[in-house]
Amino acid sequence: MRRIKCDGAKPICQKCIKSHRTCVEADAAKQQQFAIHIENQYAAGENRRPRGPRSSLVPIQAKVDLKTRARAYYVQNHFQVFPDMPNVALTWVECLHEWRAEGKSSSMVDLAFSAVALSVFARFQNCRPAAAEASKSYLSLLRHMQDRIPRLSSESPSSDEIDEYLLGAHLMARYEAFVQNHGNEADLEPLKEVKLHPDSNHKAN
Image 1 (cartoon, rainbow, N blue to C red):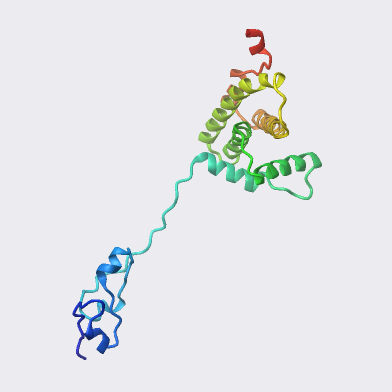
Image 2 (image 1 turned 135 degrees about the horizontal axis):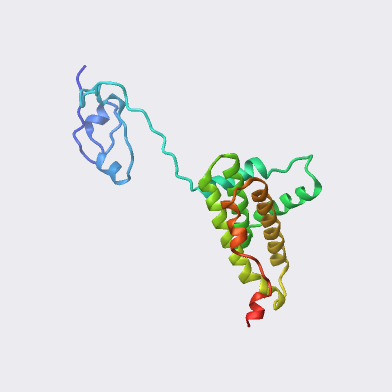
């Protein structure tokens, strides 16, 4: 069979028309960043088929930071709503889910939730770096609270701020209870290093 070679005429070559072959302008395709694979290029003799097995695709795994992994693990395995949950626990779970669903954000709630998630992840996944990160998150939270709490006496908090404080306090209690029961001496350092004194700043003034 006689091979028909494209003569490169634009916009389409006559040889391709006569042979009923699709004529693709390579330069235009490159400009549009199209990836073109011509299956019969080896059969036509334009290129030699490489020897050996075809290269396999290697999946690219996205790097996920430790905090994100811990939070995802905690939500999936320890923060679900179950029918047999006590009413109090169920209420807090639903409150946080509703808080996030409404698109609300808070450094206080975020730090508290991260501390709980990281400590649980460290315990059940045997990940010491997560325990260290949990302590750092909680220490940052305590310092943040020391700055925020004195303002409560001089300001009238909104309903959203009240929700923020309640959720933050609940998550702090969960973290401290978990660390007291399952943590080691290093995990308890943030509880010793920073103590909350709501009126300390007022006394200093």
